[in-house]
Length: 338
Length: 173
Image (tube, rainbow over all chains, first blue to last red; front, side):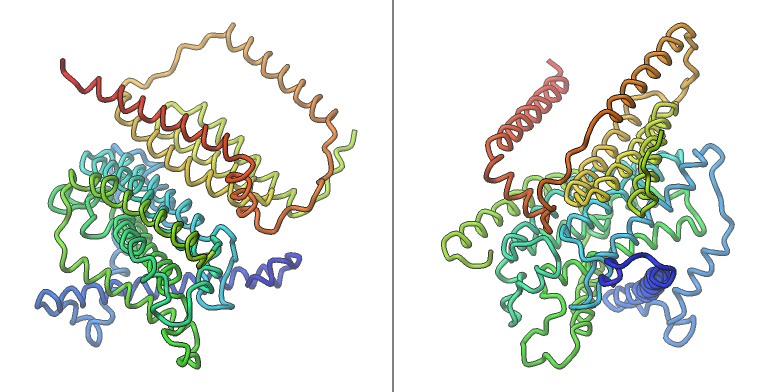
């Protein structure tokens, strides 16, 4: 993709850009459909249930049927809602979640935009979704929705800080913010990948990332038992589907980022396995992370709201800063990495 | 009077982003509900970030989005918490003030146009480095280290001050 950037924009190149975007959208929609199916299946198995097994063979068409139901459902807007913002919020939530996918390199050559700011792009754009959640909560004119929106804003802004700082260690190691350089800087054997040398950063990153995704154990903005459904309680039909969709697209983005930053991206675990193409390794690691996210959701209870901020500011942030100091000292003393 | 405009991609991008920024700013002034205002401010900031991208300052652009988007969210929450939702009526119009304001604005516009048309922009002294982020980092930690640290001290002082003020209000005695 990158080579088309430097040439003048013709109709042919424009068509290639649009085709690429539609391709990614189709792939992401397929991922979301089956991520939801596997999430329900995996959690079902972990809780001695069967999960969806009626619609289609093995229940494989369950998500398709659910999406069809959501799209055909009556579109309700509360009478006292702020109509414009109520309609705008789902769009504003989904668009950034899709736009952040533009910078992810899937293998050495498959990438849409090679940005030299890499990770910052994700963080900057994912913040816009927070605004959308607050707006959705406020525009619904419902106290549960508003509380959910407020919680979401507080949580996303607090956990953004340790999320960014935990990655600084990797950036220092690779001497670049560019994701391809970060992947290239991770050694060829799997014990050289960032998740072992940067184990503290990795742990902080995973916890902060789960919180940014609003998933259990950090799903306070939509805690069913306290807030009914949080910020999207008034949404139904395809607007609700958009909120769900953007949530799962962020799962996709975070799983890609974890793979790239800490698990060696498209590198095989040992160089002898080099004959298998990089993109297969990338998606294997990606699948492991997505599975871990489902596993965490199946096994952890929800955090209490008063413990949430304490965890971000008193545990994760000092750990992340400590990680930077240790990395800097290591690079300075042994001259490794950057 | 010619403006020497070539219709390149850069010009189209600049023009549409500039229009977006101005539209956002005007809407921020005209809305009556605080959430709408905050949202149109966010629109302006994102358009400004787009202008930075046009200038090939990607780092500045995305740091701008990162910081201001968070700031807008906070602004929105304070707006929701600290304003009344009923009784957001129309302000009474003040014709004399509005006329004076309009004359002042037009005069400022005239001065700005005059100054911009009179100014000569120096050509780039050196080509832009390929990795601007790295160059910014180098400058911040070598030449500009002292101002950078002073700014962080200033921010820390403001931060501690805010905490102290908030604590005192909370205390009943």
